[in-house]
Image (cartoon, rainbow, N blue to C red):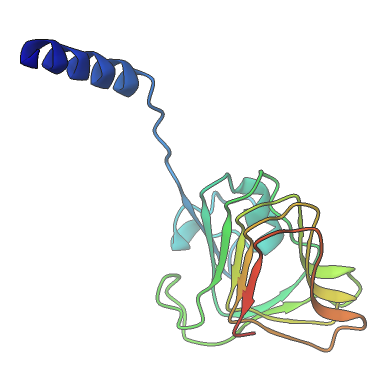
Length: 171
């Protein structure tokens, strides 16, 4: 019985590992001195806009945004969920002096918009000027909206609808 069990375990492991997929999550860097023609793969080749980083990001990726003012809005990941937008206010990851990471979303419907983008994180931004600062909707379940300053929007600050398990804290 011991030998049969050992052979069964070896067969299961061999079969399971043979079908395993490797997930290579990336970090995409955004800096005010970046260029949207860059890859964003390192601070030295950072992209200029959060919107461009959102287009490049795939599920599991982390977007690190350096201090400064970004005049853009309606920022949404192109891929299906699990993308993290992180404001690097200390500037350590992008190699910049510390400062706020500001999204000036004047003339946009939203600063960030999650529409059917589950498990997406938005952390540490200052967002102002949109109709809705952060809009989480349509099955963007388990989104995490944390440590943001959302003000000066003409409609709502943070609005969550039809998204179970969304967490909004310390904003």
